[in-house]
Image (cartoon, rainbow, N blue to C red; front, side, top):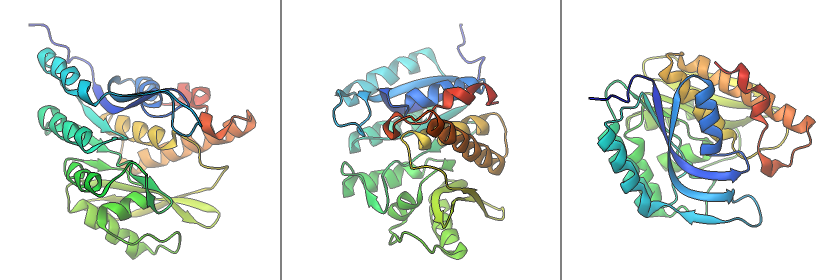
Length: 277
């Protein structure tokens, strides 16, 4: 019988934006450059992402399960599974079924709980969706929330600054108790720096800081999660992977500023793609 499982593969469950450098359009080339086959599961299709004033949009929820069922027929096995923005309770439930069907003891599941930023949930996120996302977190091996999302998932009041180490550790330990063994809380403001809080079960936590550059651009979270997911599959230590992803994004932002790219256009990761391993 033919096997399609001789090469490492990561399933990426996210939307597709034709322009704007985010979601699957970012994850696919990055994971591929890191010598892993990227297999997308589209949740919706955008001409360009929602940061633009106008865009075409098609919801793919009703097509997701028939799409996934064809993969079951092929007997596909994945070294990693990476989830990103999910637009409804129904989509989260489909993803949970996907993880139940394709998750194994020897693969990595990374959940990027794209729920909000700057202390507030996105307009699309209802209280019901937040509860469903908490269920999805329980299936993760690696969790990559930003500070807002970590607060939403743990019912912790958000504050824009002055997060002490013990506060961040409490957030991470609360999340870890739900299932994930590796957690990185991203985008923590520390004056002229931006920090990531790395937590691994059984290891000493670490705060990894880098100088803040430019203004937030679309797709940087998708770049971050794609690199961390691919590194996990390739056996790269978690903390090393977080440093790599942060440094890569910083280089891309600086180059995007040099090229005078609009913020909506994301970062020009293509300029450095050949350096990813």
